[in-house]
Length: 261
Ligand SMILES: CSCCC(=O)C(=O)COP(=O)(O)O
Ligand SMILES: [Mg+2]
Image (spheres, rainbow, N blue to C red):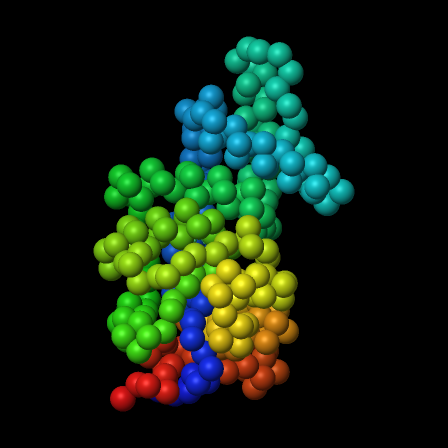
């Protein structure tokens, strides 16, 4: 087992979810198929609700922005009433969601709808958020050492709270001091990490960001945030250059805090 000393100036640890706290397989083989299989039924059942209309409005706006992309699916406005017209628009939303998911897009519009759909899946016990076994004990230790702990995921804040609120380890939301999603900016843009630091009330170099994705690590590092790349079973492989450039950990227990005994 390796040991990665955490720089003394670090006051907060910022965690990615998929591939870092949670197996990619759980997201790809449980969470995403749930959306693909249930989106049509969900839209039919909730169409008249304000939240659902807001989600569709966001998806429509995103579809307009995406109109020049290969295979993009437009979402028309409902013109008139009637079952057939409603089905036509719902089918367009379904096709748009499937298209975005086929590209694993991280748009706020898609993530917002997914977060709302997962609510029922978690609340009924159909799904439990999977967490790697080293995660909870390590976070408890970091917190005892005075470290703040935050989440930054492309999944919406609502989806994050469901995953950790209904997890295989029980409700562990108390372990986090706050949550960030793509509303603060994309994870591959350095400005997002400056905004997160401002929101936490610290400098970017007071933060250590743990992620499985080198492009995200690179963006954080450009903002002068400390980074380590997390290697978990099922994660995408790293190039030799990435392996030699980044600090790597395969378990949270490998982080060594200056105050740890
Ligand atoms: C928060 S649960 C769903 C995860 C998700 O939708 C996703 O896109 C994962 O992105 P991450 O930034 O956590 O790698
Ligand atoms: Mg990730």
